[in-house]
Image (cartoon, rainbow, N blue to C red):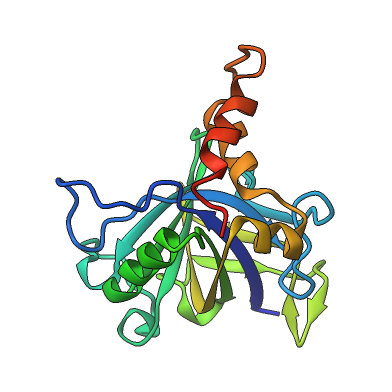
Length: 225
């Protein structure tokens, strides 16, 4: 088994373009990993997805997001099968010693701007469907271990391992589709309030009584259809 499927969601809290931002610049925050078949959210879906190197292991559970125009990629790393020429994709990475993993979404620049427009239209939650295949990795030293996974259509769903022989894990997922939702639509679909999840993450450790609740009420009016 050398294929897995992954569904992730990101939240775009501030889609307005600043004066110093270039076309295709967009900041998003990781929301959660979803069940790729049932759309169950983090409260009910608890996948085991790990990075493995003989010297270190790490769960894919704390994630930072980077959104990059696909044509502007400057690194030498490219999928072995030329995926970057025909499809949007994501790098799923982690380095020994780092606290967070990174998902870098390499997207068509016009689609990034479309995401911005949808976010401005109060659909700020974007769900990415990905397929991870050994043939698309940047090197044969990156691969999947799906021997103990649960499967759908011959692909691992919620238990698999990103394996690497290098100090850094840099895996590739092909983006098959993206859906955009309002805060309420997303909560109805997954059971997760994306705005509250975002605030709890960025305000982690800020314990002034009622602060998150006040910020939530103040921000939510910007996202109600």
